[in-house]
Length: 237
Image 1: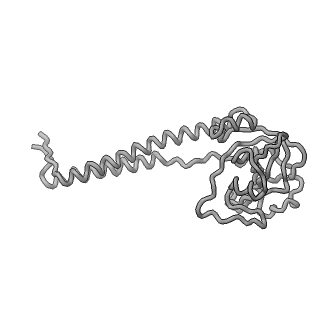
Image 2: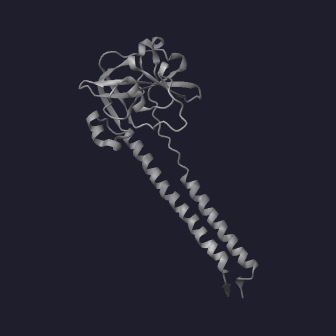
Image 3: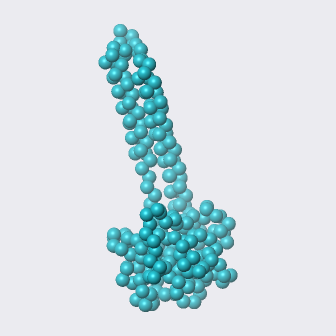
């Protein structure tokens, strides 16, 4: 017949610690469901029919990752360049330019990537669209600059984050919304910039974290029980 006579002090330590670890595991499972839902929503938005600017603005935050179709003109004289690394790990720039609709509203467009050697627009004149353009892209709200993001190089219009507010202020542009529209993969004349850089790649390690917390809880339970066995407080008669 089994018996168990837990000691008071170890039990008072064990119960809250065990409950805390189990709670963390459950929280990570909830985060896993949320993250999977978010990724599914992003992919759904990117494959849905395109909407116009008015529809995107009405959707607000729900327009994130929606495909949009706009008609307007680029202000190539106000290009900005966001420094980053490309898919191959080499340094590149995102070319960001204001795009003005026929009604005067302005949005920032991330036209795609260029090598650092092509930052000067004169080196890629063929890709400098003039006149009215039909633009297709993905509606994004980029992350704000972080605490350790370097200050922009104003003289060369180089930024180290896609700082929508900062770029617009430097350009003297009033934006219709604090978003960036990431151009689709349609090739530009001359090959640059290369659009289609939108990637849905959110880290999703919540299952591993949940297993870790539950594993620690199981280990703590094992230690607690083994301690009582060693004290003769748990066993069989």
